[in-house]
Length: 307
Image 1 (cartoon, rainbow, N blue to C red):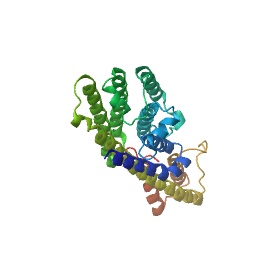
Image 2 (image 1 turned 120 degrees about the vertical axis):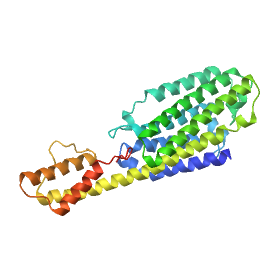
Image 3 (image 1 turned 90 degrees about the horizontal axis):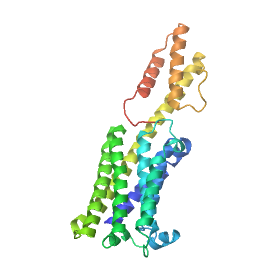
Image 4 (image 1 turned 90 degrees about the vertical axis):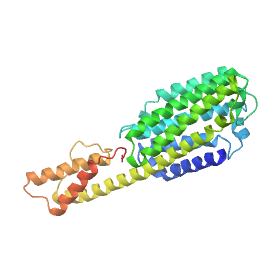
């Protein structure tokens, strides 16, 4: 079951990576969600379901350092998912505030190497197995799960700015991730200080990976809506440019060449109406309908529908 859940989430992420590659190439802001999907896919690849774990871990030394890589990549992917839904329209990957994930990633590494100096051969259940006899393994497991849970909680809160149709998926995914992390913390604690419980031990995989899958589906659906919104804006801009050219209206001076389509659309819409007033040449019924469509597009109240 675990392998199926991991591979399903991986397939969904790769679908986003491939399907959004063109948008990520053309639009800097779209690269945030695309990068989140790419890093998330790499994190799932390190689980060893497609490429043997020993091969992947061998690349970083063969002493279970791959576990740290998994944890850091997962945390960064979730954090980027938050930024994809909450960062301003002008945001770029390079302008994001990277301090939080960098600090958390460094803390993961410090605790990992201090608490686990002897890590043994590559193992999928490395931390879980070691935690039964090692307080250091327990401490790292609890710490990194708490860090992932924190990011999951931030994701749940940020979902309020998402599209209504996918908000439930983001929240369900975030809740699944948080509950999965909590169940793992309880499991590690029982294994180290009491008696392991088979029911608790079985909770992490379905909760966490179903949460990841719900989150990925949300990203995919949101990207579809975003793409439709962007295409509608591009179409309206082309139609309005035809009207502006027929009226001899130029775009407002001082508008940046790299201005967003909606910014250009708004500037041209204002210029066309100003021209109609200043030259006493009323808008035709067709032109008025077009401006109404532009207004409806620019004033859309759907959160998260960003071009």
